Image 1 (cartoon, one colour):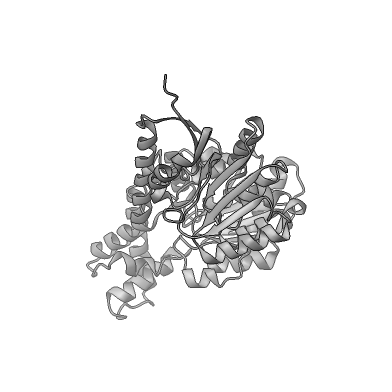
Image 2: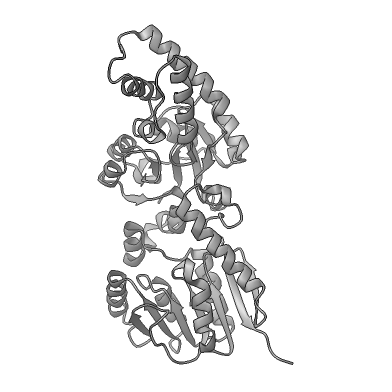
Amino acid sequence: MTEVYIFDFDGVIINSSADITDSINAALKHFTYWTLPDNEIIQFIDDNLKETLIKCLLRSTKNHYNTENTEKTQLIYEQFLKEYSARALNRTNLYAGIKELLKVLKAKNKKTVLLSLKTPELTTKILEHFEIKDRFNIIGYSKDFKAALNLINAKFSSSYSEENGIVLSDSPADIQKAKNEGYKTVAIRGGMGNRELLVNSGADLCFSVASEIEKFINILSDPEQTSELKNFAMKNEVPIMQDEGSDFICNYIKENNVKNILEIGSAIGYSSMKFARLASDIHVTTIEIDEERYRTAVKNFEENNLTDRITIFHGDALTYPIEGKFDLIFIDAAKAQYIKFFERFKENLSEQGVIFSDNLSFHGMVEDLSLTHNYSTIKLVKKIRKYIDFLKNNTEFKTEFFKFGDGISISRRIKEN
């Protein structure tokens, strides 16, 4: 049972690489050394920023810098710290979905620890700026996982052990250390650590950003209830609905006597199976474009004896011929195609049918685009915003928006007077 979440600060909670690179270049320039491109500095960044600075000095001087001159190195390092203190919030940002993840962990009464190698003053400054300081039960200033666990136990009079803890880090060394000590581990490959080393670190889980673990909090909390299906999704980063969102749809299905469901985007069949199991007379039709996921879903339906309740197609939902009327159409596929999905399948609605759309918050980025600086993600979020505007201004359908899960909408056809 996982109850204690231990977070690395840089590369997991905040992306500080731009401000660190700016500060290193400012220190180099101050001492009349050549500055370096950001991408060259980033490859040197690790937990020991003095070592990072030395590597940058060597690169700047083409290996002519005298590393034995410790007095000069210290002066340059102190200049870097001065520069960084002044720049720490210029371009630093939270990784996508972090605020929501911390909010959910707090609501589920999970204990949270932040481990920072910045000074306490600077750490506090950054946390307060992003309004997340109170979301952490303990803030530590070393990578001592055991000490962090002891602080949690002391604060809450608990007796958690390593098997109750999970460490989220972008450092391959941290992942290995935590594994050796008996913690579950999550490698965050979208941080500043070496991606190849992280992928091969043997971490229990590997995500692009830490917020992706939100969908699996309940699984980690109760391993006896963990299905093989969810385990597969968690290990292979297959998108499945957050429990709050899927429970909301299931309640609607039961309360409105929904019998025929069309799902756009099967993934590995998790939602289809959950819907089909609600009643023996419910039938789900689902379509998946990815062949590997399609085959996995077929296998899951067969192993769970649900092939008579679920029909699955392999193909592109925008072109594959799907006939029939459905009481509920669930759109949970390529976000950039939501408008096209809606327009194509609206004629497949039964008279009282509804269209559900998922992921309309997209880890909070739809409401706050500053949560990401990734160009591709920004483009995707803008397309989700465009879809939301499409729903709001649609004269044929009336849409309600809900905060459940990652943001859900229900669209109903407007009845003619």
